[in-house]
Image 1 (cartoon, helix red, strand yellow):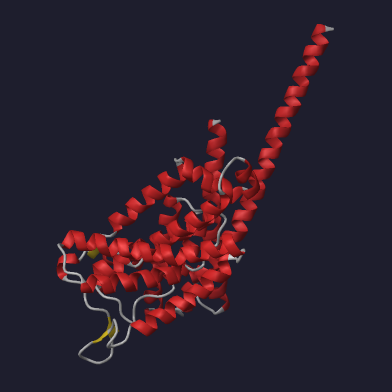
Image 2 (cartoon, one colour; image 1 turned 90 degrees about the vertical axis):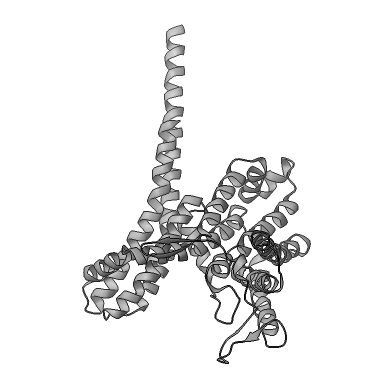
Length: 371
């Protein structure tokens, strides 16, 4: 049993390592094709990425990417592709920011209200896709893509002066009312800069994800439905309820994605609020194989690549190289996981065959001895 667990662990680590290695090889070939030396570029990325200020930047970025990866991974566990995490997170952050700017409560209580509001909005928006899937059979991919556009339209409509938006004195930026200082989340001052305190909440979210999906009956039922709806239904699991529940939980986690930026950095929702974080979460979840530790490593890697891209551009390299590397990682993830899966399946078949052969020899020997 221990040997099998060890081999499974090795196979689990091999896939993301192969994906990252493959991405670096592809990027190196692109650099060589353009007449540039790849190891010099990688050296610049590494030297700049390990600086103290870069480490703080990477961890702050990784906090949002980690929460995005967890939100996507909840759907993946159910074999659901929640591609609407980006719309869920932005809509949740917008209404949470509007609520936070309008409230006047004691700091800790106001922070809790803002976070609960964000989770509620994200859960509600994702729940629409879950309900449409179980009641009308509409694919969650289609509905979540459409809901992304609807979420953007709602934000654009409401984020205007005279509605929920306010124009800054320079006349260039529209944003919600700023959250009072008493409701700002705590920061961690380091030698490299200010580390967002919401990284603690992100870590706790990872623990809840790990325990809830890996150590509870609910998590077992959720994973069972993802593996086989027919088998899960035959064992008494309410498949439709689990589909809706998983989408709601995914949306609630998506609601937390914007909280590090809102409560630790911007303190309001403006027309420059980051977009595309939810789509990054898909890549991070794939790279991390839906495991909280793997997702954390994937989020840190994505933050590292974004940070070092600025330095590469300063050194005369094309900024798009990092985009090539990120796209290559996603492509290589799909390929490497399939290669590892087939290798693991082949190893299991070989073990079963060896055990059956050993059992057959033992039975033959026993029959010969009794004769």
